[in-house]
Image 1 (cartoon, rainbow, N blue to C red):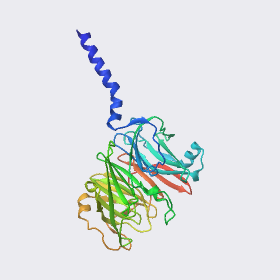
Image 2 (cartoon, one colour):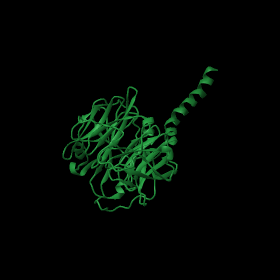
Image 3 (cartoon, rainbow, N blue to C red):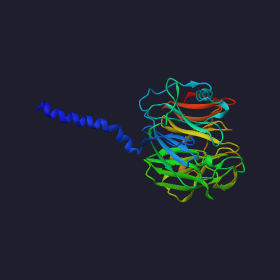
Image 4 (cartoon, rainbow, N blue to C red):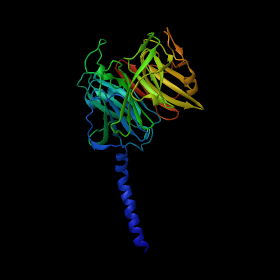
Length: 363
């Protein structure tokens, strides 16, 4: 009797084990194939380690299963000239090898980089992974579980009055927030600045919200400049723009209408924000933001204070609003991400066309 009872139990257990991995892929809506990636730009991760890649050329976001969930997490990384090492791996020059973004896989602690080989319209997109041993490996996109969410009204490819291609700003940053993928960038509409929201898993549902902000350094309302970098905090988008307004936008208001963000700080003109993270020390939350001209800034975060802050609506000559602290010990940081509760990983410009990847203690 025991044997007859055990056999069906064993068959059921084996069936569950065999179905476990496909079920996870099905839950994320991922199917095996090779993503038709044309540009690897902004990166983010879902909580279960699915990599989100912004592709401005395709006007799409790809969700790609990394199958990278149980590696030992890095605690010390120090790779000098990582772009030079990557260039050598792919047979390119360091001048023609561009690191576009960096993100840490929350399931493994491994660091992912989006790279362009070349600078023109025919540049090749490549993804790389850096593990706890500082080994750099290319991420294969052959026959991987993935899904794709495309959107309409991306800017046409060309050259604007600043000599830039507006199509490459169709996606400027990505964040995952409570079952939604939020994408910042430009559209081809009159009110060009957009925050697009996709349900995740991707099901074809998208809302595209036009964002208007008051830009204190310019003394005017702004509708055509994209969010350069953003993060979500307690269901609020914290968005930074060039020259450098910091704006709050409730996630629940991203429903497809035109809305105005609340400018809670002006952090200085002639400056472009590059990347930001949120972390906690004790009972206090902080925002850490890297910039081109004003270094790394540290701001205390408090939801009640942000809600109570007056919206800046007059011209600002220097800085105003929510206070910040400059951190001069961190120079030339171009990318950063939270590695764990006490560390961040940063990409630093060490000299012309040379970048170092290293870990730091959260300040």
